[in-house]
Image 1 (tube, rainbow, N blue to C red):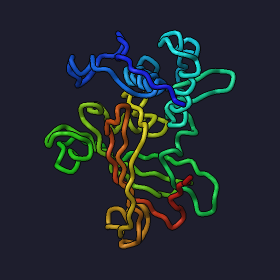
Image 2 (cartoon, rainbow, N blue to C red; image 1 turned 120 degrees about the vertical axis):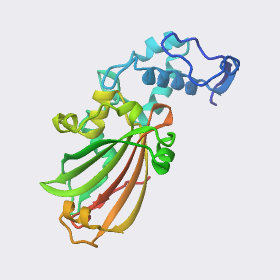
Image 3 (cartoon, one colour; image 1 turned 30 degrees about the vertical axis):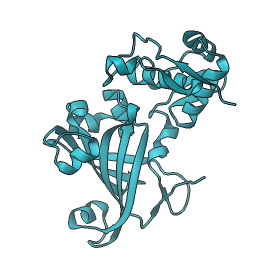
Image 4 (spheres, one colour; image 1 turned 90 degrees about the vertical axis):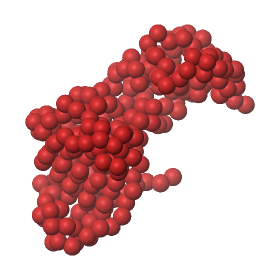
Length: 264
């Protein structure tokens, strides 16, 4: 049976509570003990105490720090590993998951060739400009209308052929300094760029898919006939604290590729 306890949040000099009144912060919390440890570990990740790719303290060290059993810490880490927040490496320890890991690339890109196998994509930034959030962008990114945003347009190529054109909306308060030159000079995935240059790691994403006809601009970029069927993929990506930090609208040419998702 899962152990439940009543505890008050542990004081943590490295994490300052956000959006919580003093009275609310001192209220007792009821949840499984390992979930409370998981919450504290997430606070450490969000505060940047442990950066992407870095090792976190051992289970025994964390158990001593939080005054709980090593088994409780292990259960919290197991759940975070299943959520791709941490990565266990046999004989080396547990590390903060990073978009620099090649295995992370295909976690958010589910496009595969019809012939099977895996192809490495090449990102080609086309444009980058600053704007103000309209009603739709503000709603998707939880901003106020008129807040500064950055918009990026880029092309994804597979085996030298254009397959995806993306229009990406980013909060200016976080990504305000991004430029087209920075994007072109970076060698790696876009999410790795966000992580290394801005300290933002994408934790999860929500996507909506539908079929649309190619307009003239997308047809020219993707080398298809105007009116050809394309797959429209709209994505909102979230960082720590379930904060939306990216909204993108992508058009996928599926004459040689398909969207693959494994269920179960």
